Length: 593
Image 1 (cartoon, rainbow, N blue to C red):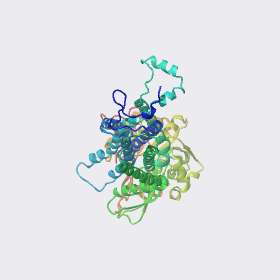
Image 2 (image 1 turned 90 degrees about the vertical axis):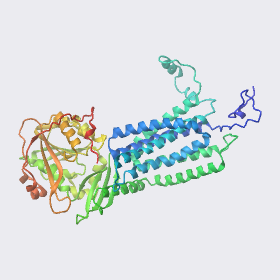
Image 3 (image 1 turned 120 degrees about the vertical axis):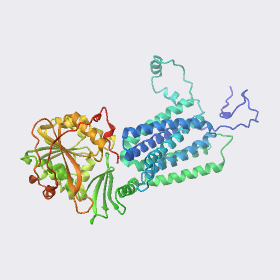
Image 4 (image 1 turned 180 degrees about the vertical axis):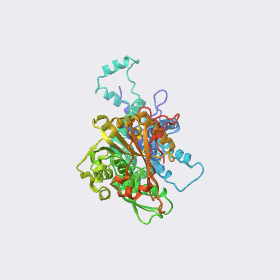
């Protein structure tokens, strides 16, 4: 039998003979390993782009589960659209190269577009909010449609089917056993070595790798900004590798796209590769420059025109971003220094004392002998609350999940000026652990539990505002023990506050003592309500009122007259409002800014 491989990939007449006059387009035969490697890279990058978009949308709009669900749903729909549209495409070689180049541009550009669209605080028009929300989802569709082109195009390129990758894998697993198990539920037959199945299998494998590497390596180590440029670099390299292989002489074709088209695409690929490589080569500088620029503008947009914000430091930990900055307000004579964690303002030096006096000193004045009080501090990684507790000689058990932030607070002068090396307090024990897990495992009880925790801005903090969490807190209270937390006022966030109080009731708390701390927040010389706090009590025991004359706080002694008469109240019961639970979340508890 003669070997006819020399004509492999050439269209034949119906009779199987070629008369040399067939002018139909001839197909380029691409090495199967190259095509499958490209399939893996394509799937890896595409799903990772969508995860980046999901995280960005969560930052801007809140609701982690909602954003990720919509993103994945839109992505899958767009993949289908792209797959259908791919039937209109010819020349799989050049169109695949185009798709890779377009993805290398569209992926990073989509992330930049989401940030840009949500960074227009001064621009107002009718329907702005839904328009911004809609436009922020366009990059998901663009990347999805482009990714949908790829599997059909790559399937056309995998034509060398002498032995598929899955046939090779057949020697690596007990094929008879697998076929036997499948035969229990399906009708089995010898595999027909279909290229579509092969490409789709590698595509799914690449998607799995993309999700794992993004979650375990890229996002926690380099952040969103550098991740999206690294993915763009990988797409550009894949395009160049495919182009190089095509022109290496290892492929056979009777018809190629014009040289000018290929040269233009390769040139763009080279430019993208060089640009992205330069950016990825300096991850810290790139992430800091992009993020701090955005954050500075975003913070400035929260205040009257003329506010100037200057970054002092920017860092990322596995759990949050940490930004310190200076700001000048026209209404304030002096420059303020402030701390942002993620997208939320934590404190500025002009009111940091009033916040911690409200959190710590007010409840501590309810105890006759503060030095005998056992305190559990949940959060408080800046050690400022510990410094206030140290003034009373209380025993402090602190639990905070973010060990890197704790180390930062111990070492950096910015924080040390506020906590005065409180981490060295001899009655402090700090545990680096998730508070929910800690409360499940500890057997200790406490006279005072202080919740210095993040706001309810995303699904990631939902557990800290759940009936399960507050039930654990209640179980850890000693007789007549108290719980204190800052809260979002009902006047500003009614939906959140109603779900929060329903959660407290469900967890067994019956009474609360509400109060504000007061400061001159706008620089007009008059005191305004600042942070809002609740003291929570369980059962029918006595409810002690704070006695500010006992306070070891200069702020409280100076502003004691600003506080209203202390009055304990029953936890409100709002009709039709469901509590927030770990297993039955009520997303109204999430606060959108």
